[in-house]
Length: 206
Image 1 (cartoon, rainbow, N blue to C red):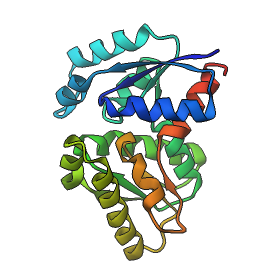
Image 2: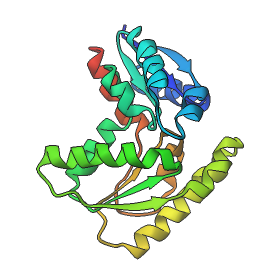
Image 3: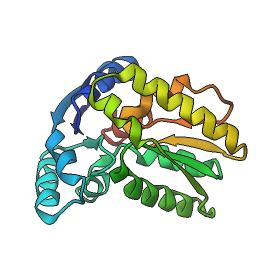
Image 4: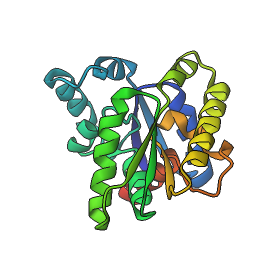
């Protein structure tokens, strides 16, 4: 039986990954560590004190999955799997342009860097378009997950209609995953939770 430790910055992700694990890996044991303060402190950049705190916490887990995009680069350097890495690899394989959709400004830079690295690993030119949905974030923080997902889906559909050459859509944050199934389009819409959990299970030898 595999053991995974998941580091979150929002409590809502615990239920998401418990449900995923029950469906795709019933024998896995998940331990959840929830640190909303990490995301709050990272909004203006991750300083050395916060980076050291995150690194020390992740180092205690044999196999760690970080589900927060904003702190993903620090988590990766600490040896954890960052939630968006498998998704970005899939997006880069689509060829581009890829629509990168973010609901937090602090997500844009780390997500862009990771997607650029994924394009480079595929030997493809970097082709990224952006959709900033930060005005929708208050719906998530208020706990209105259905309205949040629905609003994301409608805005993504509008962007796809305006940019018909897109090869894939990336929902940059795990919190956006529920919008994936609501987007009506033939263009692949990628969300991170299931791809990341499968990659983490593989890393754990499950």
